[in-house]
Image (tube, rainbow, N blue to C red; front, side):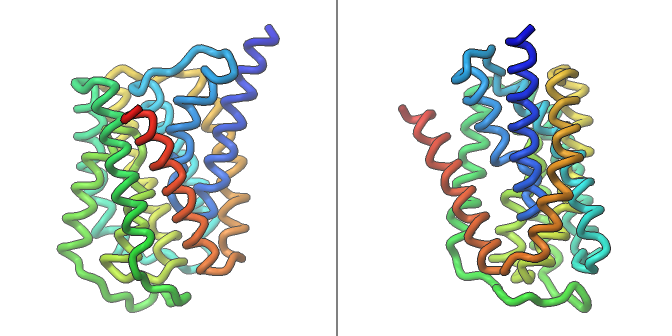
Length: 260
């Protein structure tokens, strides 16, 4: 009984921490929770999840974490609807294909896919980007680039159940030159749309675990709005550096495990 309680508490803690960070920096939380779900349970003596199971649980959790964060940011007026439309529709279609297609892939391929995505995101976060506060009104951006990059990210992120926010934010900041706070708020809306495709694909693939998913979802509903409220008050540069450090730390860990 104590083992079961410890397992549930561990899952809740992973979900809360990941969702809190998700709401704060607009990344859906999977870049944090994916390695946490892979490594923390076995490190504490609990049964390990497979990469397929981790990606499915992450997909379900991201759906609710991004929705909760989106609702928290909605009143601030930072969400750009045109940007969400141009990136949201392609990423939904791509994430559904990736989520369903992941059932044909091995765990090692899923892990490497995740590691490559995270590496690209880390590199992009250290490239020059727009840093001012900016506004979501009359925002100009390259629409074909936004749609094309979102479709590609959707397919790859659907494979790992990540909804792609940890790379859509760097794409918005570096390639599309979107102001930081607008990118964070809009990415939560795009992540929510993307997670619809990922969850649908994972359900059809048959890898969804009920109890871990429910625990992570409850943690998301609590943690994500708290993080979003804090993120709206933080300095823009501090948000960028926090996101950069989180992505970089995850990249180092997962590539170390793959290569070692």
